[in-house]
Every structure is written in structure tokens, then in C-alpha cells.
Length: 495
Image 1 (cartoon, helix red, strand yellow):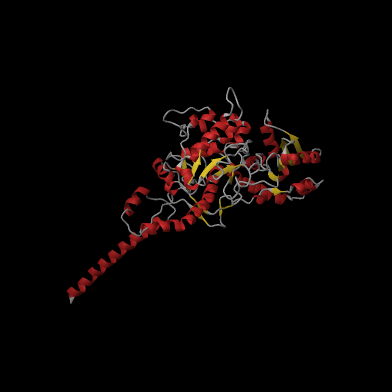
Image 2 (cartoon, rainbow, N blue to C red):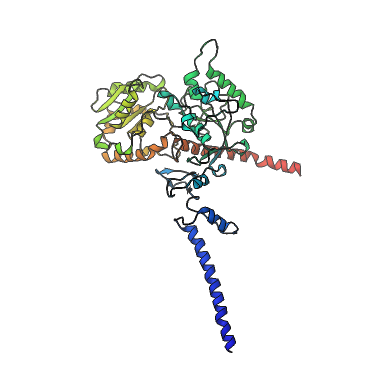
């Protein structure tokens, strides 16, 4: 009897120790899974869980992603559909060591967009900036900021969109670059969702559209013709007729010779003012912001309502062609009005700095249609937190599927704006509280209109790639629908 009683405690102790050990291990796993504090290195934890079966482990540093439902909002209150995966998150992650930065580098398989960029010779891109490549090198070393060819300033800069997109794709090949993981360059076109054509078309128009020397045609036209011939001969173009290709033609006069021949591609444009709808439309193309030419006003320097003495501000060309005649009409209506600045101006001298100072001192900035529905003036106003007043009935706005411009802009029909006393009465009727709400919103959304290198989450480059992702999904859906019965026929024939 005594032997039997003696065995019970030992067995009980064995079960107790086994259960305790199991509970301890399970507690540790849950602690690592849900803890916001990283107490053990990712490398050790991966080794511990390397042979596990059903346990999914995720550290704070490597799991940064926000899966956002259609009506939710991402930083700055932007409604967004889809998944955004920045490579190197700056919020919620402690300072990373060099090995961790490499771990966070953009993996093409995790990027929102895998982009194939044609390896065109320098004469189509950086060669237009005076950069000379070599026999085995078509691209500058973008890892060294000092060796990146600068884009010319002045008004040239406002249409430099292809320059920034190309730099961003080139930088995606460097694992230590801290940039969004929205778009990543891939070497094989079969792995890409979209194909990017790195032709600096706006620069080509601005600098090389005139006929010089003994040539009977311009360099700009020669490059366009060569580009058309090249693309039309590529299997990648033939596969979908170019529908999955991106071509940037931000200057309204760029790609004039080639746009009809390449019209099936996805264009990145400033507006549709000089395009027929069969060539460019919202169903397939993207409206991108101009690069603002005034400096970005720091939030700490942004004056509130009572410290902006000018009610309405406009500085620019007044006599325009086409529908730009409205500028002339408004000039005669407003030029003598109290607390209104409506004057001719250009970039010569200190024109840009004067414009920036004027906008920063004004409650409202007038964005009036000119030769085309859009202008750089809108984006200058946004980064100066001057509430834009948009008087352009046919304007298309960047990222309007995710940005509600009515939250930080005022829209007035052209027919109303030219009525005597209508415009100023309308602006004076806007309360301080209403203006302040729009001013606060401007300070939030201004970052979405910044072009910079390296790019940052939510800036203009990142927003353009996200817009491409939303467009390309419809192209893929169309392709898949066409394959419904095509693949079935192949299967039946093979069987």
C-alpha cells in the first residue's frame, strides 16, 4: 500500500511539470506574436520557429502594412482601396541597424507593382540632360546623389514627372534605399504587371522641338518616330497592344507625333485639354500633378486666417488663347478691387519667390483656366496652404478617386465667376471657420504633391504608382475575361 501511494506523487509531478512546460512555451509564442516590444532579434526567433508547422510569427519591424478597406482612411485622411506596403516604415518601428534595413528592403514579390522598364539608350532620357552613358551603361549611378544629372529649373521643372518616376524605379534596385515598396523594377517583362517607357518626352519637347542646323526635322520628332518603331516591334507591346505600358507625356505638346500611334498605352498627363477622347480619357489614363515651382511653406510658417491680408491672389499670364480668355475678363473685374492682387507675372527675375510670398499672404488663390484646363498654379497654392479657387470647368485633378478636393478647394463655374461682384461676394461670404477647415486640410494633403528623391510614402511619386495600380487592375480583368474560353479551347484541343 505504501509503495502504491508513493508512486502517485511522482507521476503527478511528472504531469504537472510537462503541462507547465507546455504552457510556458505556448505563453512565450503568444507573447512574441502580440507583443509590441521587440525583445529578441528576428534572426533568433526565425531559427526557433523555422521547423514549426501551423504557427505564424510576425515581428513588429517586418510586418508593417496597412490593409485598408474602401471607406477607411490612411494618413492624411485619404480614402484608399487596396493594400499599401511601404518598404521602410518610419512610424512604429525603432531605429534599425544596417542588417535590419536590408531585411526591410523592397522585395519585388511584395511590391504593389512589379514594373519592367525598357532599357532605352540615354538619348531618350538622361542623355537629354547632357549625361553620357557608356557601351555597357545606359543609366547613371542613382545611388550617388552627386552623380544624378539635375533637371533644368524654371518652367521646365513643372513637367518633369518622367524624370522622378525613372529615378524611383532605378533606386528600387538598391537594397538599402529607404523608399516606399509600391513599385519595384524587375528584369523580366513576364514578371511585371506594367511596363514603363523611360522617354523624357516633356524635356524633349521643351528643348529639342526646334529644327537646328542642316536637319530638316527636329530631334524631338526623330526620337518619337524611333520610339514608335521600337515599341511596335516588341513582343511585350504586341501581347496586349500596349495596354499595360506607361508613357509619360505631361507637357500638353509632348508626344504630338506619336500619341495617336501609341494611344492604347496608359498615358500620364497633366490634363486632357489637347487630346481627343479616343486617345486619352479617364478610363485608361492618369492625371499627375505638376511639380510646383515655389518652395513648400513649412507648417510652422503657415499663417492663419487673420494674418493673411490679401483676400484673393493671382499672378501669371493674363492674355491667353482658347478658353483662357476668362483670365482677361476677370482681370478687368478684379484689378481695382480692395484686398485683391491680380497682376501679370512670370518666372523672370524673382517672379517665383514673389509668387510664393503672395500666396502665403493670401486667403484664396485663383486657379483660372488658361491655354489648357490645368496649370502649375494650383499646386503652388496647395504647398503654400492658400485655399485654391478653381475656375476651370474642364479640369481633371490628380488622384481624385482617393482625394476629395472639395475638402480643401473651392469650385466656381466659369459662367458664374465672370458675373459682376459674384466672385468676391462668394469669397467674402466664406466664414473664418470654413476657411480654417480647408487650410488645415491643405496642410495635411500637401505632401501628396511633393516630388522628391528618394520618394517617400504618400508623396507624388508614390501616389502616381498607386494610381497606376488601380488602373492596371482593370486591364488585367479585361485580359482575364478574354481568356475565359480561349484557354478552355486550348485544353479541349490538347486533350
